[in-house]
Image (cartoon, rainbow, N blue to C red; front, side, top):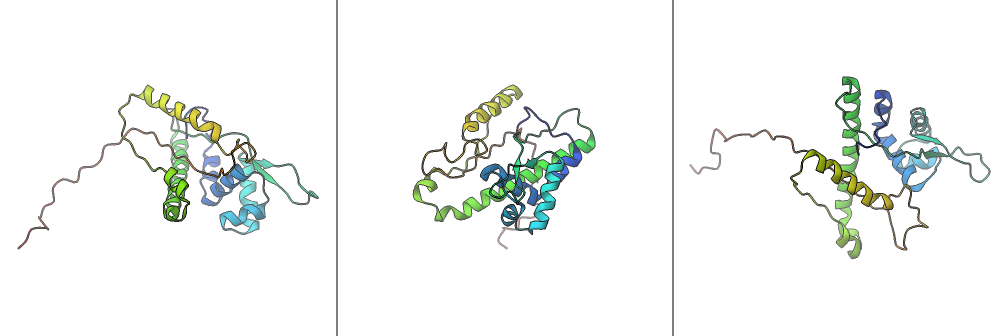
Length: 205
């Protein structure tokens, strides 16, 4: 999530989005294109009627919209709005806005962690070339605030051409599949030092 172009500011909208099923529905629509409530219900593990409700709530707050019909036009199709999600804490945020943003970002993080956990669990079943190309990396960097902002922008520009929401199957090379890039840039917060234990539990009596 980047600070550039932040547009989420309504606490009700952010709380509406910070729901596991709605995030899964939004990802499904963003990656695979328009779908019916029944089709997104399967990926979210909910009933079609529950999916319809979640889609209406997402539409209410501007995250999804009606898509052009297909076939005989009997089924209602939904698609994501052409607007990337972006949210960040701003100095002037009111407490309710800040709390809603925190809840949404924590929901994003939980979903991202679950995605990474599934990838790790499945790593042994991946073809060798995909297994070798998979990277889980963590690097401590030393930067000032301007450098951190610039680094985020450079990474965003590097990834953007590959984003599934704008790069369809016809535009990608043969053998392409959905992958995920997770980028987290943040200042390291002080860690509480536990101190020395009061007893040496490893001592041999």
